[in-house]
Image (cartoon, rainbow, N blue to C red):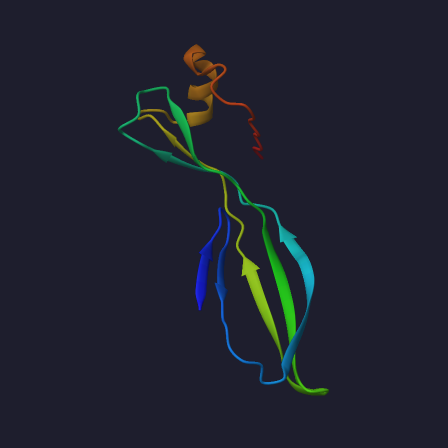
Length: 124
């Protein structure tokens, strides 16, 4: 057995003599995409007053299904389905103390201008 680590992957390679099995697989691809929840804001007393810092980045949730079929010779030996659900994750922001509205504190403080590239505000 060999293990290889890539920048975004981990691969195990198993070696043996053939016993006549072969594997076929298919996937649904990404389905049931779920938008991330609203951002989470946490007061951080270690940050200066009027500061806001992004500490997590939002990702969508989704489902992926893989069907595996194992054959011995020409006969289907077994089949199974592997379902994986990825949970959506919100943006996370820490902000300095004593602010009731961390977004207002951030946007009213001229020292914060130019410190972020993209801001998405969705208040309802």
